[in-house]
Image (cartoon, rainbow, N blue to C red):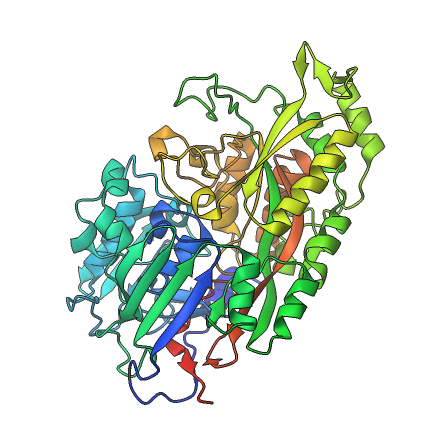
Length: 567
């Protein structure tokens, strides 16, 4: 089947039908807790999930993905398709039509100029846009009137739903961000901490890495929503405290990402105050191998850049040996139970895009030793391998979390078994996943040899996600250390395949290319070492209605529909 055919039959709307609400703000306060605290409310300056999702309460895209992965309109009346004329027959343009009467929270009208500006903002030179892959292939944007946006692509775009779609690509107000283009973007603190939006809530106070307070947006397009007059978004602590705060004490209404052992979650649920919810999507816990040298002996500005290849991990045999030493089945058993599955893929779903890549699932310690021997790393008297007078030592970092520290301890032992000395470092998640270009501890800056975290993508098509690993998307000083090519992978064949994927319409062929790209990052090069295909586990209070867990977009995607269940 041609993708063009699917575009012609794409669903154009979704009707939400929660319990009827009497009036806006009638249900008082709702309290959300994320143990990874937001550090900024601008998704274009941070790829951290906690920043993207907290911002989604305030700023919105033209369209989102629902809980099934289907496209649904938000700031537009319908999804453009070939059939309705919104996507050109030659697939080189898509035309979006804004709903009439939309207002920003400051009462001014949302227009096509704001949408075009959003693209200009992310595509600005030296801007370091964290979501640059969303705008790949965009040649120009036309705004013939206040409600019409025409996005023109430099080649036919069989899947044109990237820019302005999903929680990672919301619309920002031109008037507020006009002086924040390019290198000035990180300097606009007031705008980045308190964006004017079209979403159900408005920021009243933001304490980075701590708490956000919000109130109902009086200019929200549905006069009956949101049901809650105020919202408190608490960040920090740990996953266990967040889970207890909802399911045991009832202090909070929603707790995100309960990265805890399954028996711990089950015990919390017995508290009777809340309910865990879960679902699988594309979230993969992985180890990223730094292809560049993070040594502090290098001049600042050169560390972890392509100027200096990694002295140990540049050898594919070494990376493969480190992967072979890991027992993924045990990691799943200890960390996630039925909420996790061992995986060798960066893209584990949808099924059509998942590679038949299972070679990493069996731990092979002896094979790992043999590979390191072949690579010239011999075991010294202290049990640590060395080569040319250099010890095999790695700095392994991740965010602070009980499951991740358990994983670190196990992997350190397995690597020790093959002669690798590992120093462990864990960093507060608010800092690790933050976008501060001045911080030495962000996962983008990657001042370590290997690091572990999880990531996923909006929707069900992996084109933009895989496109994040092209050469030019490596974080570096010139991009304000933004970019999703975290390990600085650079391969011309890979870049060419991304271009080919962007031009390919037939789903079976798209899947074939996507699998090749996945395998180039994982099976073939081992620059990314997938560990666990993670189910999303969160929890909501028993008095919070309207919650629909969404693994394909922001978990807070339908917060406007939440309401208090009267006891």
